[in-house]
Image (cartoon, rainbow, N blue to C red):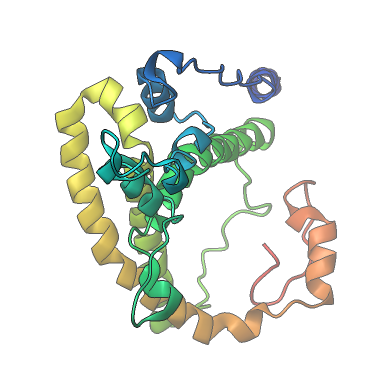
Length: 267
């Protein structure tokens, strides 16, 4: 009864948080800067808010509005240095090259900036809630079902189901996956979670080692994945037994239910 009450409280709390709506980004007054970037723009961008960047991308000058050659500043043309660099930044500059095609006309490659923005906003927000939601679902399931024990207890005998090479490949992949998961979470959420709690120095120390571990353990995960795929792919081809297993929830939803499965079940 206590487990069910705790599960209900947890589900209500998550539901109320999940349905909370984010406030829209207020319009920013740029009249004081003549339409240029303001401090509010910078702070909003650092806070991960979505901004209309057209006030920058469209401000690339106009050669047709240049002053006459005899007028003051007439030799400067209709595009300033800042507007020229802005046009290069947003890929709207009229760049001509003698070789290399259209690819060679790209002077500033900002593809990484798009990924950086996606990582710091969408991925961090929805990925964080997905992670919290998954852990909460596991906790709710545990509170409702508790530990799932063996019906008849242990028989006292062991059966070798996997060879040594299979166990090696499995734990190589599983162990590296755990390290990649932990270090990946630290890198993704370190600035917003660890810095307020432990400070910038502690976060920097963790991130340096997390990056080193993440980059060097990735090969182990790839090797383990290839080993497991080669050894077990033939046993993981879907069949009718899997459909029957799924319909009965894998036997963990109802007591005493043991749906048949082959070497690997559909879970």
